[in-house]
Figure 1 (cartoon, helix red, strand yellow):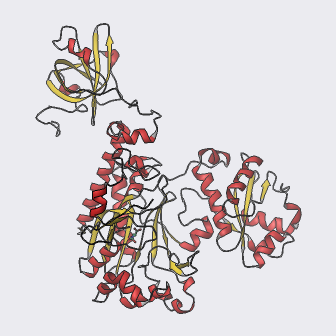
Figure 2 (cartoon, rainbow, N blue to C red):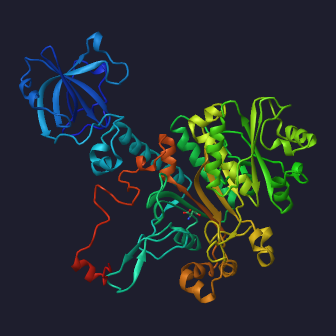
Length: 595
Ligand code: ASP
């Protein structure tokens, strides 16, 4: 018996199988396709759950009315379940063994001609799809993305509830939380000249909940950030937001690993938990990224020691002034000179000076414009450190700080993420489907490029590593933090930290960022006051829910897993927002638009 039986239907369009043969059923759905075969009308009736073939024979009382039916008419059809003749069995769909012989038909609603074909692969402009999202979401793949999203949310909720987490809502009308993005603001009618900000995340409120003794909090929270949009960004996104008291980073990791294991087991995949961990500094120097895709090896090497005194001044000069030479080696047969030139252009846009390379078709006779500068000893040491095999190609990065590693990291990501490039570099299909990773101990502070002041790398509430707090006074730029990121297949899926739970430490860190006592009280009063009353040690994380669902659904665009997303310019073609306000509304809000 179907659980989706209603007063209008006995079954859904995905329910009926051979065991229903002989029964009389009523189905509701949309007319998908209609065709006339030798005087008999066949229709596909479709709903969220599947497709059922309807047959209308000339002797049926509803044969004539089928003339009127057009695509996407909403129909109610009653009839008898009969076996399909052997030649029209369809093993690809659940209802493929039967058809329904219609004896009654009701048109519940008609439909205008469609602005686009609802076929799975219709190449329709996204703008058009969003404008008619009600039709776009009738496409099977799109509807299934949303169904999956709902299931994943359900699993997360059930799992966290089973661990006694409390789901607590925090305000949407609030004041700005400084998390690095611009705020969306809402004018207050009752308070002329004052504005609410939509939260960039519930960060401060969840910390206050910990100070309140609520112990374990979660929320599927909406975050608002007015940033430049990309395919994996929206002005509003959802995160599985978590915070716990009397814990260390390990407790958060265990909860998240348990939750991910449940979520992925629901799609039939088993995860290896605990997830591997990597220091931020290792991620940067071994993979040139703080979110390395560990489905692949392709490690970057630091070959600086070999070239410290090299006659090739590009290398030795950089090394002598404290920089590094990095190397990335891969199979080179498919990598043409013009591809190398293209990659060099990509890197130059990232401030690389060039892209030196060596081709090792025969390792004894390396080919490259730069080999003439190297001694046989240097070449031998290089071959040995990189464990060179015939046919490989090595790229080099040169520069200060992490730059040479980041440049090789960009190449690594290009080769991994572009199917054609992966083929050129002979990358095998990855051995694992899901590579989760914790990246830990990000630097606490970094210099703001514009103001030259210290600023936070993730959010200002992250605690320094306890054993490094002494360095806050002497060498703040080298203090590591209790910040961790969760990475999946090279995507930053979430980030979190152990927080400053004493007012003194939080004020000290704000102080390093250049805030005076008065500014701290004005901007962060709510948090520091709460910390002042016995706030417990606490830690948490926010996991990007749209990204997670996008990865599981296998789409590159999070817009495909959001029911009503915005376009790249932040507009919603369906609701036509943002939209102007009329004069009366503006006046009421004490606003005037200046041209
Ligand atoms: N508030 C952080 C974010 O939105 C997450 C966290 O640290 O818990 O990225």
